[in-house]
Every structure is written in structure tokens, then in C-alpha cells.
Amino acid sequence: MNIDTDVLIFGGGCAGLWLLDELRRKGVRALLLESGAVGGTQTTGSQGILHGGTKYVLQGIFSASAGSVRDMPARWRESLAGAVEPDLSQTRFRSRHCYLWRSDSWQSYLGMVGAQAFLQVKPVPLPDAERPALLAKCPGQVFRLDEEVIDTTSFARVLAERNRGLIFQIDAAQGLEFQVNADGRVTSVLIREPGGARELSVQVDRVVLAAGAGNDQLRTQMGLTANAMQRRPLHMVLVRGDLPQFNGHCIDGAKTRVTITADVDSTGRGVWQIGGQLAEDGVRLEPGALIAHAQRELAAVLPGWKSAGLEWATYRIDRAEARTADGSRPNDVQLLHEHNVLTIWPTKLVLAPRMAQQAMEHLGVLDHSSGLAEFRAALSTLNWPAPVLALPPWELQSTWISGN
Ligand SMILES: Cc1cc2nc3c(=O)[nH]c(=O)nc-3n(C[C@H](O)[C@H](O)[C@H](O)COP(=O)(O)OP(=O)(O)OC[C@H]3O[C@@H](n4cnc5c(N)ncnc54)[C@H](O)[C@@H]3O)c2cc1C
Image (tube, rainbow, N blue to C red; front, side):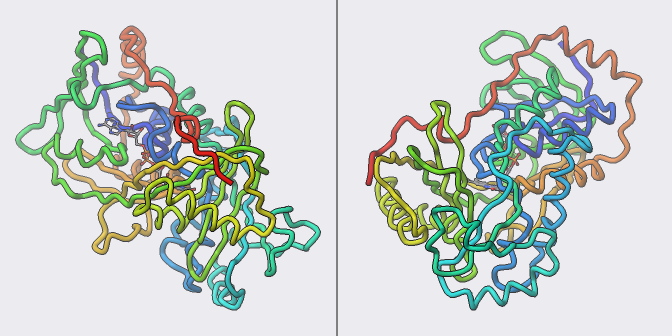
């Protein structure tokens, strides 16, 4: 079996899905191959905060990272309202805002003020009466930060449904073979049906690697330089039980000491994901030690914290990004364009629209609308298996520890 494509994308996280949607709307013959579940590894494992830059100006400097995300919350809001494409209005919000408070002196906040002048989303001081119960007795000022938190699973579902029929399941370990010509261009990709006997030869004009942590392996398979990527590990904490829907960052010095995002699990229980510095420090801790540390941290930073009757778990996950000289987070989206292969890392979920726009610019003018009807017809007759939707991290945990 054969099929001709203009763009073949690997990876169905936020980067691949947003780009696929752009290409389909432009009438490009684009196909996405996913080796796991739609929604990706990092995307559905993330905290889903649409950052507007505040956490990047904590040192009082308007950093390049703040500049790259500054316009993104407004861009997302348009899509989440269904006002512009992609229409993401069916995405569920976990919260419309986060709280911001400090566990150290607010003196260091003064340094942030100048840098915040350049941001679109700025912290708004909260009157005492409007504080959430957990922060009612917080000694310092509490702010509201209008950074939305989205349910990344529903975001992925919306994009997968809009692009139904264009997302194929593959077995990346056993079911992929690349044809590369003498100039280094990928000319075709042979895929084998997972659990089946069929083989499909996909002729490609351009290839986009949007496979997150899988990009390095794909690049090696295509004969491109390895080591273009870095992984920065996190060890996240989950807690479930009778918990309020609370989302926020506790700042200490120039760091986010803890970042809490809340949701409700499939049985109706409250669940929190806890990241920030806690998850960076947690990398060197075993789950039991990290949970004990998390319990102490929450008691220290949330004056209204009650820990009785809760269950705890942890998960390890890597942030996959383009390699930087010192191993720090890249300031912006990252693209590598070699021959007809584009490797992309969005760096943040919130940067997905910017990532798609820059990838479209690199892909250049794509106009093959003449073959579009044949392409769609060929795909529908193939009946190739589609990947399932990824679950949020708390639905993947089998071991929960009771703690007080
Ligand atoms: C714990 C955590 C919290 C975060 N919180 C936030 C946040 O609140 N806000 C924010 O803006 N950013 C956040 N981020 C960063 C953000 O999640 C990532 O930058 C973003 O999701 C990366 O998206 P992606 O599409 O590149 O990768 P992924 O979401 O990892 O998707 C890659 C996809 O490629 C697939 N794949 C892998 N190998 C292959 C292959 N060989 N063939 C085909 N498919 C393959 C995978 O199965 C996966 O579906 C967080 C990250 C982490 C880890």
C-alpha cells in the first residue's frame, strides 16, 4: 500500500497536534504518526498552566523567556473562546486563574514590579475578603494571576477529533523504516500495522519530528546528528481526597517553591498535582521521601492546609527540549531544519501556537490541493488503527500511599 503526503508529522502532543490542524486547514496533505497515546507524554503530564511570563521575571529582569510567552495567553484565549482557529472552545478549563503568594519577604517582590510592566498578565492584589480559605491567614499579600489552567486531555481530544482520520498508530520500535537519499532527504517511510500484517509506504515531501523525548531516537534512525536534545527530569507529587479546587504558585526568592494545580478524578475525588522547585528537588528522592517532603512543604506554605485522610503518589517525567550550552531551559520554541526534516520542541505547552506558526514558516508554501481529495479518500479506505487518548497522570497511578 502507498500514500503520498506533503508533510508527515511524528508525535501527537501539543506541538504535533496544533501543527497538524494548521496544515489540514490550509489544505495540505498531512498525516500524523503516534507511537503512544494522543495527547503525548509531557502534554497530558503537564500542569496545563497558560503562563504569561510572571514566573520568568521573579529575578526582576524582563527575560527572553518572558518575552516569548508574553502574548501567548491572549492567543490561547481567542482559540479557547472559539473566536479564531483552531477552535478549542470544547477544551475544559481547570481554572480561570492562579493565586500567587510568597513564603519569604515581599521585599523581593519590588524587583519584579518593573519587569512586570512588560507583561500582559500581571498579578492583581487581592483584598482579604477575596482570598481563598487556604490563604486566608497568609501573612503577606496574596495576588490573583489571570493565567488559565486547562485540562490538557480535553485539549488533545478536541484537536484529535478535528483531525480524525489523519492520526495513525505506529509501533516506533518494530514498525518503522526510513528511506533516505544520498542528499540526506527522507523520501519515504515504511510503517507496519501494530498487531497486524499490513505495511504502508508513505511517500514524503517534508517530515516534522514533534515527538518530544522521542525526537532523538527518530533523528538517529534518519541519520541526523544525535544529542540535539536534552532532558530535564521532574519528580511530581499527586495528592487526592477531600481537597479544594485550588491553583497557584508559592514564590520564594526567585523560585516557585511549589506550583499546585487541581482537578477532579474519574471517581469525583479532588486531586492536586504539585510541581515547582519541589519536583526539581524530588528528582534525587525516592517516592516515600518526596511525599514526606511535600507534606512538610504544604504545611509550611499553606496556612489553611489540612492533610488528614489524603492519599499520595508521585510520577517521574522528563521535560524534552533542544539542547542548550549549559543545560538550562531554552528561552523560546526550538526548531532544527535539516534537508527536508524539521525537528521541533515547543519548550512549553503555552508556546504551542507560536511553535506551529514558526514551523509553518519553515515548511514554506505548500500547495497540493489538487491531490487532496485523493489523499483523503485513500486514507479513509485504509482503515488504519488510531491511537487512544492519553489519560491524566492521576488516572495512571496504581500505588497511592495514605498519609497524614
Ligand atoms: C510535569 C510537567 C509540567 C509542565 N507544566 C507546564 C505548564 O503548566 N505550562 C506549560 O506551558 N508547559 C508545561 N510543561 C511543558 C510542556 O508540557 C511541554 O513543553 C509540552 O507538552 C511538550 O509538547 P510536545 O508535543 O513537544 O511533547 P509531548 O507532549 O511529550 O508529545 C510527544 C509525543 O510524541 C510521541 N512519540 C514519541 N516517540 C515517537 C515516535 N518514535 N513516533 C511517533 N510518536 C512518538 C509520544 O508518544 C507523545 O505522544 C510541563 C512539562 C512537564 C513535564
